[in-house]
Length: 67
Image (cartoon, rainbow, N blue to C red):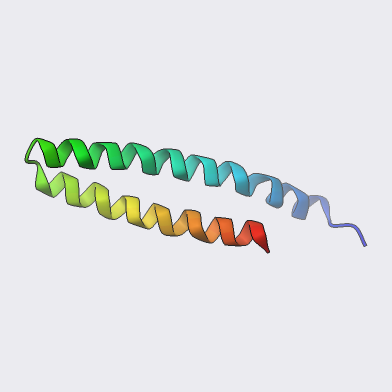
């Protein structure tokens, strides 16, 4: 039995979301490091927290890809 067109579209979109999440996470880590180095600790911790959430989302997408 062949997968439906919607299932193929969803499976093809997941790697794109994963790439976008990882790129955004790299940007946020850069902002957090810059904020730590310039003593803007509240910005640094906020971006670090968002980066951790994005890492968890990327891990979930990767798990979905492997299943």
